[in-house]
Length: 111
Picture 1 (cartoon, rainbow, N blue to C red):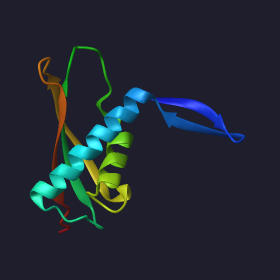
Picture 2: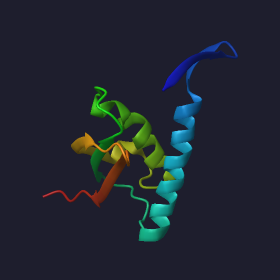
Picture 3: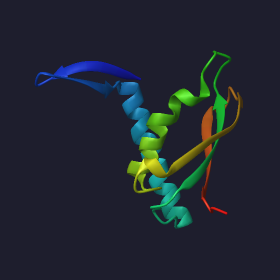
Picture 4: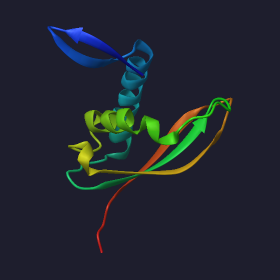
């Protein structure tokens, strides 16, 4: 997903083209979701239920995608800072015809 680069004498990690395309698409979907549901940008903890639908049986670690996904949701406007994200991977399964990530959001209510 990332490639190491040296820019102005500094070592940084930048997104590969495929990952950058995914990031931009996911951000557009996030903005559309916010407009459709009238979600208010949260500055408190947000529970994120995550359902993964993979395109094939390749072995994957479901948690490897969390960093980029949480960054997308921050930039897209779900919360003010991804420190408020409480990601919960609920399930993963195969769906060759429609691979995707489904998310459910709710504000965290402490007892």
